[in-house]
Amino acid sequence: MENPNVGRKIRAFRKLKGYTQESFAKTAGVSVSLLGEIERGSRMPNEEFVVKVASLLKVDISELEDK
Image 1 (cartoon, helix red, strand yellow):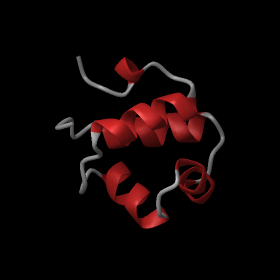
Image 2: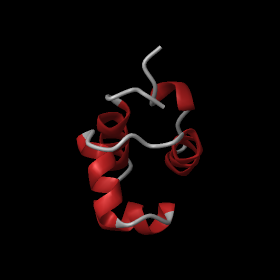
Image 3: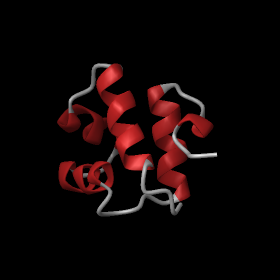
């Protein structure tokens, strides 16, 4: 996953769905610091994480990726 915008999209959908960063990190099974790094774009998530996030947020994976 080399899309630098995926983190910003995760953050936008997370907020839209009413999750705090802390609650979503717990739901996704990652640390708050890792989620923050991904949302800021300083760390790229792997494909498995993006698929999991899309499922948890109930969005199509294509909505998180630039195509």
